[in-house]
Amino acid sequence: MILENIHTPADVKALDREQLEPLCRELRQFLVEHVSKTGGHLASNLGAVELTVAIHRVFDTSKDRLVFDVGHQCYVHKALTGRQALFDTLRQFGGLSGFPKPRESEHDAFIAGHASNSVSVALGMARARTLQHLDYSVLALIGDGALTGGLAYEGLNNAGASGEPLIVLLNDNGMSINPNVGAVDSHLSQIRSKPAYYHFKKWYRGLFGQHPMENPLYRFNHKVKTSLKKALWPGSTLFEDMGFTYLGPIDGHDLDRLVHVLAWARELQCPVVVHVKTVKGRGYSFAEQNPDKFHGVGPFDPETGLVKKSGGDDFSAVFGRTLAACAAEDGRVCAITAAMADGTGLAPFAKEFPDRFFDVAIAEGHGVAMAAGLAKQGMLPVFAVYSSFLQRGYDMLIHDVALQRLHVVLGVDRAGLVGADGETHHGCFDALFLSEIPGFTVLCPASFAELRRMLRQALFEIDGPVAVRYPRGGEGDYREDRSGAPVVRLREGEDVTLLTYGVLVNQALAAADLLERQGVRTEVLKLNQISPLEYETLAPWLAGKKLLAVAEDAFGAGCVGQRTAAILAQHGQAPEKLVLINLGKTFLPEGAVPQLEHQAGIDAAGIARAVQEART
Image (cartoon, rainbow, N blue to C red):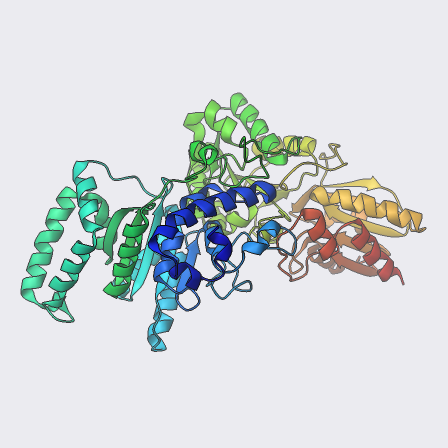
């Protein structure tokens, strides 16, 4: 075994050439073995094995800065940088993160849980290096769809014009840009990826001194060459027009070529794009045949590729089916997703109504703005998007939707704590920022039945922008539909009033049971709508309460509890004592949702404890 003796990237550099391909095979076996137990992002990592090994043959990531984009491509990197023994804890509470985390290792340059920011971050690092007169390489490894985000092009535009030595590695696995085609392309790419070509190019540039573009003859030859290349090989011109030297496309599973190209890119000392073609899921037949299925996968049987499902329905699937039913009733209903058709439950909608389904890729801001255009012209657009991803569309929510009170519906998936993806993916901000946008109605179903009803309300009964927020996974013990009013009482009690919304009602009701056994009679109220919050709605239920406790799986600043207390206080009806039970200001790590709720004190035991402490 070679892999078990790899503890640092220096061990990778020390390997003989003939040991590298066996190492890659072992890495793929390692990934399948561990991800099959813990779940995680498999297909993208299988495709990046040779590329990651080549990076560690050429660069020193303890000093050189490697910025991942998207970050879930980092498993091989982690295995080669001293973290193999931690893979049994991958994405588990207190274990190894599924994304780069500088707190884990000096080899992780930057937290990377979302997408399209790597070139911008890398350019900042490169400029810091130049200003500080230091010597190290900066690489942005972008792929798996991240190049579909607009921020990537902002970064490329600025980086290419900067002249800063910077290497952008485009891991093109079929989810980034369209492939080049044709015999000329294939032939030229082979020529350009051979060491002899690089040595010749380096020698030729050297003939004209340190600044060849200042020489008229070099400029003339360069202009002729560029014109010919644009005619024969148009795929490379996007990056070169931005100021990059373009190398590729390179076979991303050919280690020798990868090593040569990366070494040449480092020597060029200018902005370089290295276009690497990889196969998502490479080396594991089930993942190669179904890369989408094995993109983010739960525990599975490595022999059959069958996912070990926990069984039962989930909010995303219920949302997708309900939206498809609404679309069958009304031809104005259309669906938008940002590269998450399966994750948001929209795959059946896409199949049934392909003309009314739009996947905008990793471009949430564009998705929101496009929804605004659809709404302005009379359609009923529904943008299904993960809560943490919706943050990228915040500006458009204000300027393109709310200012014109357009009837755009948001299906805010993964609201609240999401579990194994950790701090970059928890949906703990949408309840705060959506509620602050004028004109937005924010609905919070606590069961599948309420989700079905609230989505119909959002589409057909409410004017202006509406968000329906719901969690990842299935429903709890609460399975009723009490969505007919903004506030409903789920349990009576005289000692304490416990207010909450969404699926946290399950913990609130369980906390009320605990408190009952301790002699505390607890009233449980459920908010079906957290925006708008108005005194006339709240007062009949909350005015002048003795002890009001508000439980939320959101951060504390600007939370529903604070806003409710402020509204009551403005009218002289503040509670005698207020207890806010929420996430405070702490980013929670990866882990199972019950574990995270317990750590944050928003599970039944934590809520009951907070209430009892407030009563003493």
